Image 1 (cartoon, rainbow, N blue to C red):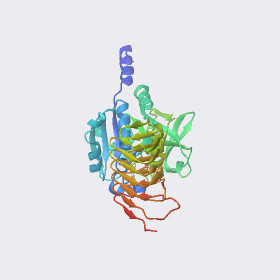
Image 2: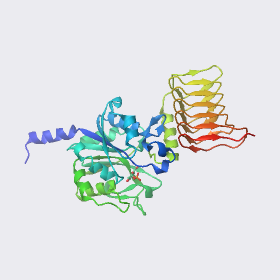
Image 3: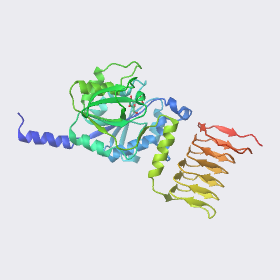
Image 4: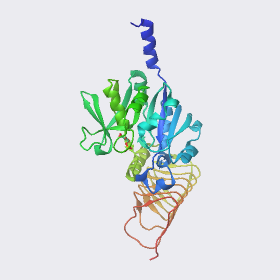
Length: 374
Ligand code: G1P
């Protein structure tokens, strides 16, 4: 029987358990083509900030500064964007995953990095508004072996789904044909060192991957303590174009206005509007919420709600709303409104004379479009 002193020190060690972070940033991003032909899906920006940066910042906010990022084909781009992590106040290392063998496989190859330390696994394409701090804090304190977050979804066939009995998780199934509930296991998971035993024991699924859901099921089957919390905030798996536009809407709604650019006297501004350093607006209407990036010029244009325009763009004679326009893109004299569009980097779009209707565009990096005259 342990002495009181030992019990106290065990309790204390549970209270102060330190955590590392593991972010998954591989994958081909096939549902986000054409962007992902030229850029990693985790680098597609929401309100001018790559999805992956929110993930890193949210871990740092939880006091997690030792972070490993598992990278695949797009390793060079991820490394170039994140570096050693010092810009985020973190120390980031990279772990190469040579083939997309599953989330649990990524955990397996992170074993040396983690050692005996419990960690938060965060899928780099999951976006959570408001971060994960309360959930991570409770995991630090409750001593659970595993903690997951659940969120109701409309399409449970597309996610890992939890079955609960009396508030406890009894079963987790990956993309079930007949879902036992509508509660998806979102891409933020907390594990202690038992996870390394689990990922060694589970077998690849029908899609040839080591599944994270089977890993959690292993914990349940072993009688280990699996805690599940219902997520009370906005979450999205940003795998698809519409999801990116929706996440952009959500973030823009939560940002405070600020002006570090120039607006001439002929321009009308309806807040909330964020103008980044060196942005210039001439004879235009800005109807927020919206963000205009560094050194971007808006001339004789209307920029409507839920629009994010990245740095070094030029818009002249354009009506745009509900859209994301990436860096170094130039759009001129488009007489139809652009709505719900995602337009890539270095795109050149020149209009003709036709009027009426609207455009809904998905243009990858380096697209060039000229509209016919008349
Ligand atoms: C993965 C997991 C799934 C989880 C989802 C969350 O799905 O396998 O269990 O619900 O992330 O985003 P995938 O992105 O591989 O379809």
